[in-house]
Amino acid sequence: MSIQLDKARKNRYNRNAMKLLIPVASGLEQTTKRQLFTLGFEKAPADNGRIEIEGDWTAVARLNVFLR
Image (cartoon, rainbow, N blue to C red; front, side, top):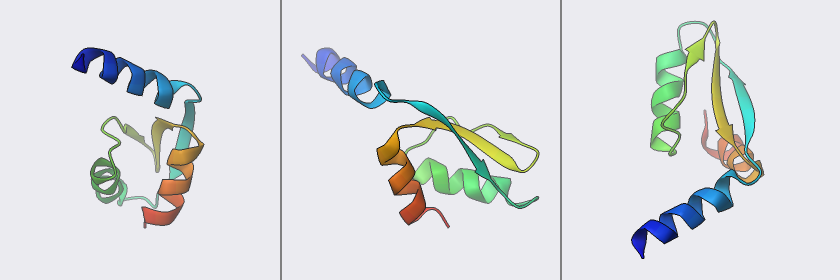
């Protein structure tokens, strides 16, 4: 039962998934990655002043409110 619920949650959240690029000042990538981790974004590779994550429009709204 638990596995079915997990799959349903993944399908619901990945239904409208898109690539989000977050611009970051040079040298602050690790700090921003820590903030993203606390918000629930575990995979967040950093590359030359930007961090790439996947999310939907709900994630965009959460990032706008909680990411500093």
